[in-house]
Length: 141
Image (cartoon, rainbow, N blue to C red; front, side, top):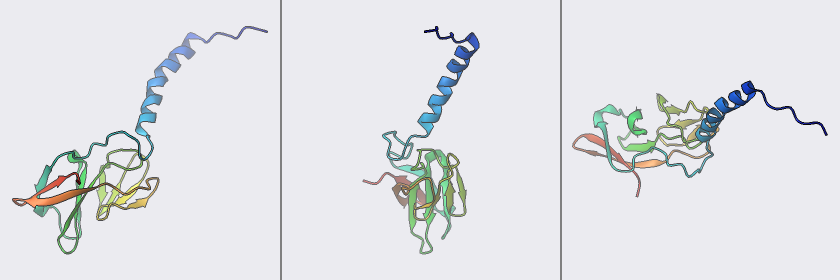
């Protein structure tokens, strides 16, 4: 049996440089239902003036990973904007459609429902209300 050729220095260094990058890709693409803790509110958080969300509209609060919508009757709804597909923070809202740039999932900001895959699970609904004219969102009990 002939001996296997040894790897060149270049091959070893290239492999060492790519290993951490590959690990980051795997961490970012964790499957739905993974045990990774998404960055959604864990306690009540004040978002802004109630007047920021018009009837029939929605507002994205990126810094808190929350979207708040208001139906035509004036009732508020809030959802975590951590994508249920791979736990990426959603950073784009067009009208009432949320778009995740990680893999292209889309969600309805009024209902939290999935509009386009790969996500199959709706966004997590949050408690939402108004205190002294300010919107406050918190995790559901």
